[in-house]
Length: 68
Picture 1 (cartoon, rainbow, N blue to C red):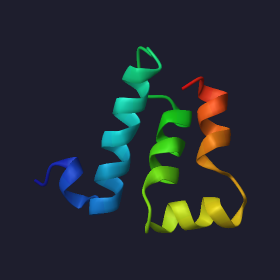
Picture 2 (cartoon, one colour):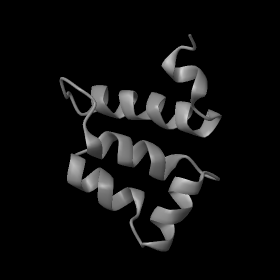
Picture 3 (cartoon, helix red, strand yellow):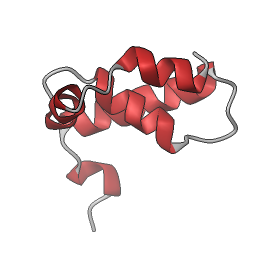
Picture 4 (cartoon, helix red, strand yellow):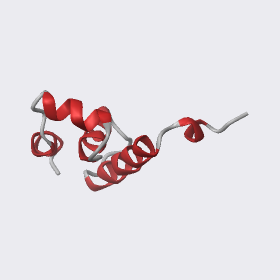
């Protein structure tokens, strides 16, 4: 049986790793949806970041919301 992270794309793995770092930076007890959203937004070249860019959801806005 494959481990769960083995099925994720490289961009997804990086976004989750960044989300974890953002959660720690914001002193959160857990990785929240906004941390994952910021991780996706900062993962340049990923489909997720491109969609967020087209929707005019910028990393600065997410960071301000989170308090980073």
